[in-house]
Image 1 (cartoon, rainbow, N blue to C red):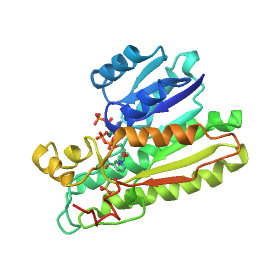
Image 2: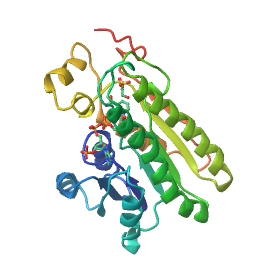
Image 3: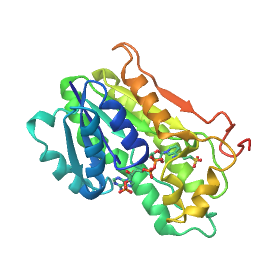
Image 4: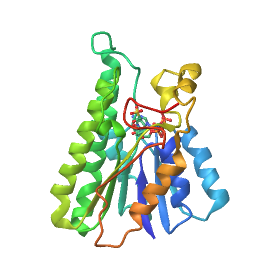
Amino acid sequence: MKTVLITGATAGFGKAIALKLSKYNYQLILNGRSLEKLSPVIEEIKVGSKTPVYPLVFDVRAYEEAEKAITTLPSAFKNVEILINNAGLALELDTVDQANKDDWNTMIDTNIKGVLFLTRLISPQMVFRKSGHIINIGSISSHEVYKGGSVYCATKHALLALTKGMRSDLLEYGIKVTQISPGAAETNFSLTRFHGNSERAEQVYQGFTALDAEDIAEAVEFVLNRPAHVNIDEILLTPTAQFNGVIIRK
Ligand code: NDP
Ligand code: 8X3
């Protein structure tokens, strides 16, 4: 039974990936910023499976906090074979002349530095064992840029560079590295982007069928279940109605 650490598992893709993997032969370390938000996810997993689950509370932006949490893992969960860097967010759709620099800092710290921190903390044990798999949740925004999305898109462009860098750095140890890059998917993503304004968030997904978190969980499960000699470098998946970062058929 392989051990998987999923960041940002309280909602959206992270939660769906956890539920999906609980149906297979994995044990799960689920990260969230609060136990209160993680507990219902763990309860849901327990209803449908006997998968061992361990909650790990930390903010991916806080290196020392993450390091401390990881050192407290019980021995049965210490060997993390699969790291899923999923926690991330976009904030607002402001143009560069007007955006709030705190929003920029939060996106950069979470989407870039959070991934780096977790990878730095977990990859040495993969290197030691000469095996492992890191999956980064990127975005169509790793390839496209849209108005008001410059910094979010920059973080996801940076993530694609990091994914390729990790693949190159870890190649000699037989460690797999994959990026899953979804287009528009209906989760809490837009609610977070618009600081809890549900009306603005709902508008994003009106008039077309967006991806859902289950679509991304299926992609993760596919990637993980390839034979040892196959690495999926990237999966870019979009709603059928979405051509790129800007054009969506409604
Ligand atoms: P959700 O908002 O539904 O979930 C985001 C998750 O990330 C939550 O569990 C949230 O926790 C967690 N998170 C955010 N910041 C931190 C942090 N500092 N430390 C720990 N956890 C954190 O969004 P999605 O599931 O849609 O997003 C998941 C990933 O997918 C993100 O990287 C996003 O950029 C990417 N993505 C999303 C797309 C979409 O259209 N939905 C498309 C392409 C990529 P909390 O509950 O504490 O906020
Ligand atoms: C999230 C999807 O539409 O902001 O990465 O590019 S989008």
